[in-house]
Image 1: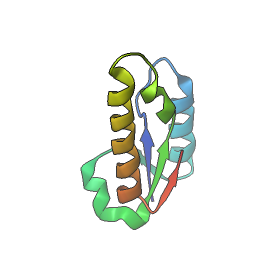
Image 2: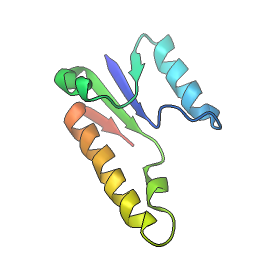
Image 3: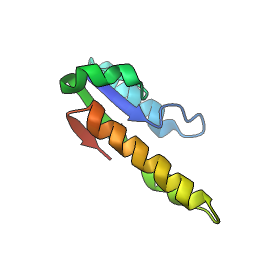
Image 4: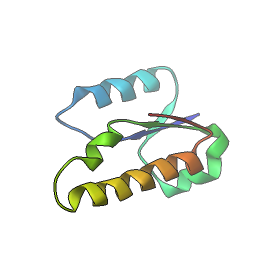
Length: 85
């Protein structure tokens, strides 16, 4: 079983490392978003953290962030049978 986590590398936030290590200790494979994972959809779980942070800001940043968030969510729905966020 694969756990796809986004964001995957956040050096300033230990929550991601704790989450990854917890899943690894339970025997799951943990990875970031990769197109090759779409093939094994039934064996994937998608976990999306802080998606709302993409939309914060002024000017065009919220629009770009919204489109980026939609792409992340769409990937999760395509690549995984189960999605959590």
